[in-house]
Image: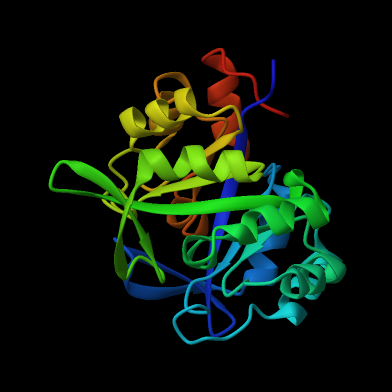
Length: 251
């Protein structure tokens, strides 16, 4: 049985880690390199770095940040934000990233998923999907959640898998930052639709929420930010509790 993964997420703006609620009201949460080292020591399985304004401001994710992180940690990490070409990905992987995450650029030009999977392998390609429930349907949002698209989330997850994505990072914008629990029902639905791992993101507030998203939500991994950044949940303690609940985690 594959182990369930715990993944701290570091949203990056102007070189600092930030956190908000429902993608707005951002507050400083610390230095990303120092936080990365802390989480590696705490036995996080992976890390995700998302430059949340790179697409909006038409900047590229900072390669030097990736290099500094790679020097400090020995666990896999994914980088996203402003990635739109094979050249972008090559630079990030060469700097030390293990995987890349694409969102807005994949929606704008879906062939990008195929190109990156062919060039670097599906195991490197994570498609991040920011979704919000609107008028009875889940729709994909882009540009850091600022723009709604006509694309239905359930149709998009199937397409990205067919195009070669190796993993889906699913963020429920309705749950993001609320600490009221993950979108378990939606996560389970998507996990049943695809054969690639699904990372649940948005709403993790306590240890029980992680247990629920693994059991009821059928997630392969669970991602959270503020509860780790502000020391509300210790990753080692979380893993011990999950193991006691019968969930297989790496220790």
